[in-house]
Length: 335
Image (cartoon, rainbow, N blue to C red; front, side, top):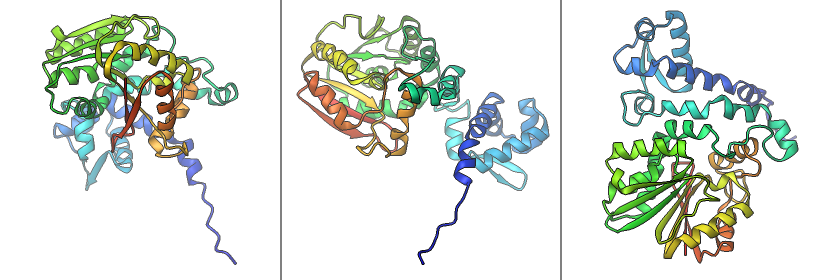
């Protein structure tokens, strides 16, 4: 007889209880627990004093975070893992804790509370994040820049490897602005025009000022579908944007992008790009559900789909660059 695999309810329990993990991490960030440990507080009692929390509650939370892999524990002492030290200590230049303001915001969570209704409808029920001037994008701009820095650095290397070319760059849906800013930081011959909602551009301008490139950082306020881009750009950045819309909408936008580029210019797209099977790699493939519950018609597009969208918009050819180990990929399309 064929050997039978033992049944297990663990996947069900782990998935049903997955919100426990995010809420525990959120609590630790709000309590400054990781920073307290980085400052030398390593016992539950010391961490509790630094975080103005109870010793019992701190011990239980630290044990839970150790089980998850955010901390290590020896005897009664807790320490940060290398990843936690880099990304969750507020003193680290790579601190990412601020991203919870966007990723765990009630506005985004609401879409997931209505997943069954979104499946029935085929799109968001009440949480259209692409609505004009949606306030969620200011939270995105404030919180997500550190998470995007590795991708921004890889994109800059792809576009301008010697950082010695004069480039006019249009950054569509710029958000925090880090993609254009990173190019301009590396190369003093880069001029950036950032396009986004006016409130979001205030954050991008702050980041440009901190980077010391304000004199080469210009802004266009409004919708990418309505604003006149102008012409003569060497590069147009479309980072984490096309997934919000259906293919016909993207094709219409990309025809505008094509017209704005110089001959031989490049459109540079950063996206979660699943394989053709649409179930791998997991990080990219799972993104489709986020678009289902948060947009009317968005999706995570395969490279074949993106290549076709760009070709229909008039681009001559496209190239594909996975950004391992990140969940993103880059598509560079040539006029």
